[in-house]
Every structure is written in C-alpha cells, then in structure tokens.
Length: 121
Length: 121
Length: 121
Length: 121
Image (cartoon, rainbow over all chains, first blue to last red; front, side, top):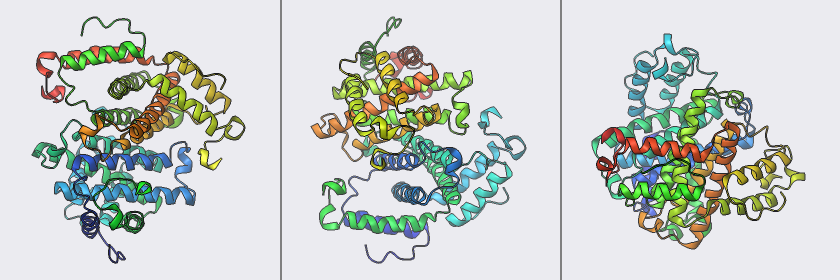
C-alpha cells in the first residue's frame, strides 16, 4: 500500500482496499459469503467492547474502550466496503433507500418515544 | 425526514440519521451499547442471506438475494454511522489507520495467497 | 419425526435431530461451516429479543419476550448439537474442561466482583 | 469450583456454573441481556474458526481447528445454560417443542433436498 493519507470517502476507501487485497492475492478467499462471515465476526468483536458494561457507561466511554471500539468499527467498515464492491452495491444509495422505507414503517407520530417494532405500532 | 435524494457521503448520511432519530425521540434507546447490539443483529441478518449457499453461488448472486443483501448492508451502515456519531469516531479515518496497521501485520511477501492469521505467518 | 415426547438429554436430542435432518436429506447443507453460521444467526435472533431493552427489564422478562427467547434458545441448541455431532465433540465434556480452565484464569480472590478480562486482573 | 469430573448432563452443568458465578459475585453482570450478548460473541468466535475455510475442509477439520471449535462450543453452551437458568427455560424441552414446530413447517415431502425457507416451500 502506497501513501494512505487523506482518504476522504467510501469510494476512495474501496479502491485502497481492493488494491490491498489484490497485492496479497486474497480475492480467492473473499467471496461474498466469507466476507459476510468476517463482517459478522468483527461486529461481534465490537459488541464485546460493550459486553459487561452498564448502558450508561457506554455513553461516556473510557479512552481505551473508545479506541478499541474505533478499531472494530474500522474492521466492520473494511469488510462492508469489500462486500459492497463484490456485490456491486452502493452503500450510501442503499442506506438512503432504506431510510425512505424506514420513514414509511416508522411514522413520527406513531414511533415517537417507543422502541416497538413497526409491526407492533 | 425531508428530501433524501442525492446523499453523497457518510457525513451527509450521519446528519440525516441523526435527524431521523431525533424526530422520533429515540436517542434514549440508542446508547452505544445498544447500537453495537443492533449492528451485530443486522450483520447476522446479512449473514443469513448466505447461510446455506455454496460459496461459488455467493459470487454470482441471484437478483433477489442481492437485493436482500443490499438492504441488510444498509442496516449495518445505518447503525455504524450512528455508533460513530455517538462515539465521535470518524469511520474513514479509523479505517485508514487500520489499513496501515494491517499492512504492517500482513506484509505482501508473507501474506500473499494465504488466509493464515498474522500470528501464524 | 415420530413421537418426540420425553426427551431427557443432549444425547437423545442429538439422535432426534440427526434423524430429522436425514429424513430431509439436508446433510449436504449442514457442513460444520454452515452450521456455525446458522448458530451465529440464531444467537443474533436471541440477542434481538433484548436489543432495546433496559438491562433491568431483561431480569424480569414479559411472557411474550420470554417465549421468544425460549424459541431462539432452542434454535441455538439445535445447531449446537448438530455441530457437536458433525465434529465428534461432546459438549458437556468440553464445557467441563472449559470450566476448569476458567477457574484457573479467574481465581476467586482476583475475579470477585469485577468484569475485567483475565488479562487485566 | 470443587471436583468437576464426571458431569453428565445440562442440569449438573447448570449447578456448576451457578456456583462458579456466585463464588465470583458475577450475578450483577449476568443479566439475561448481557448473557445474550456474551453468547453472541462466543458464537462469532466459533464462526471465526471456519471463516476463510473452504466448506469441504470444515467437514474434515484439522486437530487444532477442532480443538479451537470445541472450546468455543463450550463457551456458547456455558452462556446458554446460564441464560436458561436466569430465564427459567428448560433447553431440552424448548428444543423438543421447536422440533415439533419445525416438522410442521418443513414437511418431509416438501423440504427434502432443498435449503429453501419454509415460506418459500
């Protein structure tokens, strides 16, 4: 990997990760199925940071825990970007469409202040 | 949520999600601990798309499975963005730092063509 | 599946699940890799029951949530039993060995009342 | 923990784990919510064993990978037993009921040889 300073967006990150993987000849391992597994494993490592923590403490994280969370967030994002690249999915556009769907499923007047599922509103 | 067309980056997505959550008064539920749980649940729903699928099929996904994956990717990203917002973590910068660390852990000459962990290289 | 009343232990459950899978010709899908994925997906569905719930509420679960948790616990156990069967692992013996190891890693006098990891004790 | 040799079933395991936790005064951390998180984290560690592995290799696991899987299986079971204890759920009975429900959802004649979901049969 050459100079990695100053990445600005997901598109640039995608290019960097693609080069990183190609240099190591890892495409053979990185099927979408395996990438989804890896993403799930990293999400669990992120979860582990908060495992025994009182909920209130998680809102005011100690620096070491915040740094640990930050590293696991990075791992999740790196696999997410690769999976999107492999499937030809634009993550920002997908999130945008999902937000539109969520707004219809959770109208403000019904969803305000409750954590109920849309099917129970 | 007002007009959602044309989101271009994670920063914009963060603003939109923040407004969406605030309108519904959901901040009380969205502690970093709970967000990490939600992210992990969505990562598993993404995994479920590939659950019984032969690895090769995942590289050539049927349209319905690709759309399902795309929606779960969106959910993962939406919670990731919220978690980053809550923790004050810049996800692109975190991923960039992680790639630098990964490049040191997995030097090309040792890591090429193997899926071994860095501790076993 | 014939009469399923009165199962008493994991050994019997293993036999029943094995027959259930064989009748449906599902062994081809049930590789250990896929079983581990399925188990992880079910564990996340169990997690989802508790997702937005205050910690205290989870200690005093409403009947519907308890029933939902019970069903996901069943799914986790069913895949765990199949995975053990496929790998030739005795889950009770494995748990027993792990408890011995955990007792050494977390001696009572050091571990009492703290959720710190063994490496931080 | 006193002598742990010869555990024979989940009931005995439950008693042992309960004593282990009580000795360390860990009940305060072991809410059902936190136990479900811990179980999910361990399920992901189990998944990690198979992460980059070709499906066929997982059916013929190398001894080191089998031992690693066995230890993670133990962790999953230990948290599952604690969660059942906390919720008053009998895991064998829950699995038995789930198998009856699964037999109805996946009748042999329709489910044979396919990995489709029940809703798609």
